[in-house]
Image (cartoon, rainbow, N blue to C red; front, side):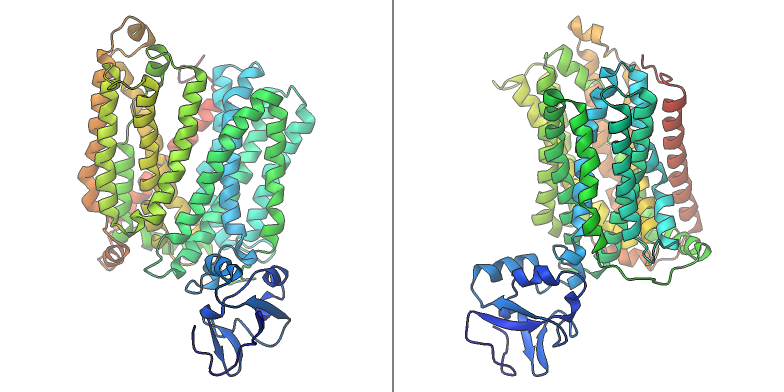
Length: 549
């Protein structure tokens, strides 16, 4: 118990507190949620919470809170920890839009992914047209920087984030409603394509707003709690993905595509009331577009930006997978479609567990240590694929053995995911979080896209065709697996570019700025955006240009 000599606490089961900060947000909710006297300091001028001197006053309604030791108090202290600023207590109604947005992003990705994989084909589309539909859904992600820049500089109804977040989810919902009611049970491919283009536009717009808010609020975290906000939000996102992807598959196969589309239309509407009550500063002063561009230019010239982001780009580019692996599982090991889908679902589960593992354990490790050990472990798992190709499974079934090395790679990916996102947040200049964080994530994502393109380009080096596998010639698969494993391990050679901690990152920022570093960073960023845009448009305008039927 903290000192209570100034004001006695009533001796019944509850004590009283007055909170004028809830008059326009979660006053009703606060009546049902409790606050522990052990986390309060009571002063002679009234009951006040230790988190802020002006949070409580006698100006508003009275609330009831339980005494120490009750289960209500424990629940309250878990939901609203007293050592965390109110702005970071994301389970408060005024902040609930943040984790809910991330959860909805995961749910929408999980529901739409399996649908796009099979629905166009069932409607009679060619593989090329199916690729076009997928490209249209992801094409708006190319404009994430534009979405962030716009919200940084131009307010909507007096707000920079919440209004655009709500607008994004409305557009996403309306696109699916149009598809449902106009297309009926047999929509045309053009209507399907347009609907998913609009859904993607709204989806990515809302996603950028969620990232921008987290980038702003993460700066309020103490050193001891650094990364907790992002790890919690991304845990929500990957939980939504993990649950909704298999659910979408089951719904589609059992009762039809329109039920999945209905869920895609309904879920975004649920978040709108939560977005409405989100507490954001109204009519804040924003920088002019010119001033923001100058600030971003100054930021990317900093060694604290181009050096670690250089590592992110190089490392992710070298994470080249074996593009023939899925064909090997189907042709040689004769995995069924259900087995392949189960590998994907289990991979989602382990990806989520990897996020949790970092949040609760590895978050105290240095960023370098995380990448060194996970890269080495990933190399071991990749090498195990060679044993599977040679038929050495130590008595395990091929499916279980494949599950071990395939799915565990996603667990490692979950652990590696958060250190870079935490680092990116601390690189964002204040007031430009939307554009800058979107720019950093674009660099990260474009490197992964380039890695996928490299994996495809490696296929002709050895004969890894389906015919060769059917003839029992697996030498090409072995050689390709050795090469991709070596490339993945080589990323560790660049780990010296990555700061160990946030403190080292700050120290890098005090170095002399480099215009050359800034120019290289921006050239890579915008060339990556251009590459993604060209590929997306080619898939749409010239279906089959990459060799699909």
